[in-house]
Length: 83
Length: 142
Figure 1 (cartoon, rainbow over the protein chains, first blue to last red):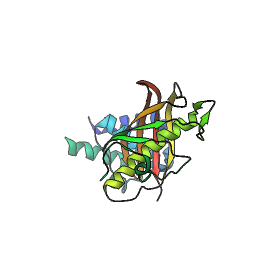
Figure 2: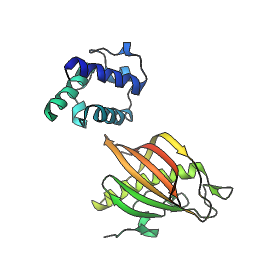
Figure 3: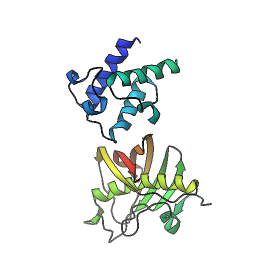
C-alpha cells in the first residue's frame, strides 16, 4: 500500500467513524480540533486503526501528533516497522 | 489469596460500590482480557421495578462487571479497587430482563485500553439465552 492509498484510507475511516465532512481534513489541519476528539474518542481511533491497518497505536505515538500529516506519519511508520 | 469464584464480603474488596448499589454477586472467572460475573436479583433491590430488574439496573450490573475486572486486576497487584465511571455506552441491546430470584451471567471482553479509557463488550445471559449486549467505555478517576 503506497502513501497516498494509506492517507486516503485513513481519511475515509475517519470520515465514517467521526461523522465529519472530508473537506475539513487536510494534512496541515489539527487532528484533535477537526475531529472534535475528546479523551474517550482516542480509544476508538486506536481500535479503527488496528482493525484497518493491523497496527496498534500506543499513548507515546500521539505525543508528536498535532496535524493529520503527523497522524498519517505515525500510522505509516508503524506499518513499516510491522512489515 | 482469593480463589475463584469470589462472592459476598470478599467481592466488596474488589469494587468501590456499596449496598444497596452493589450489582454483582460473584466473580466466576478472570483473565487479562475479560471476566465472567453473576448477579442474583433480590426482592427490594433499588433497581427492581415491577418484580423485574430494570434496564438501568442491568446496565449498572454490566458497568460493575467492568469495575470488577479493574478491581481484581488491582487486587492482584496488591492495590485497592479504584474509582471509575462510565464514559459512554454504545450498541446497547436489551432483549429481556431477569425477574426476582433469577441470576444473570455476564461476560466482559476488553477490546482496548488506552489513556485510562477501557473499551469493553459485555454480553449478559439468562438461562443461557443472551438478554443484553452493550459496548461501554469506562474511565478511571484520577
